[in-house]
Amino acid sequence: MKFKNIWEFPKFGETVLLEYPSSTLPYRELVELITWGKENKIPVVVDDVLDTLYVYKTHLELAGIDTKILDEVKVIKTGGRLEVGNVIKRFRVSDIMSLIQEFEANYEALLSEMEHAIVPVLGIERLFLLADSKIEVLALVNMLTRYAGSRRRTAFYFTNVDVLKNSVPYVVPLLEELATTVLQIHKKGEEIIPKVEKSISEEVKV
Image 1: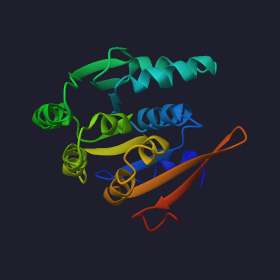
Image 2: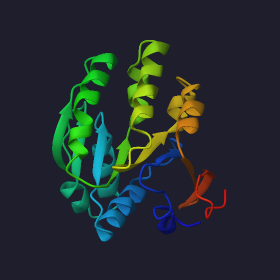
Image 3: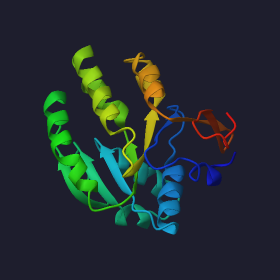
């Protein structure tokens, strides 16, 4: 399955875990997902965790790819200071439990004006690095679980699994259990190859 077909099969309410290694950064795939949303008239809201979107934009610029689409997209900014896109909400990351409380109090209202939305989440692994205990790690996972199944959105968690496996390895299977689709990407030469590791869609071969 090629990436241009990947974005079509998740249903609204699904949680897609897009796993990538540190040896690559799926900035082209992010642009492709945003473009697909625009072409299908589905609002896209990027959740930018700790300036990860800025890293994606920098890589795109160095690769000679137009970044205008990132400058126009709506962004929820979770921590960080480097602004990219049309920021519609900021969440401070002073500590994990305070962040979770603020997020749960405000997040649903941000999407309430949209019937459906595509939500790429960039850098979620960085939040787990800030957690001081297993209690905070599980609180983060529970927060993600709360929004799983929300028909207002399809969430795509772009996740560096190398970071998690070397810091909090037990988080990876927890996220894979939560996700309805697990999509792994690997680099072969200059080509990025997707593999569907898990899917609830019958038409998708795993």
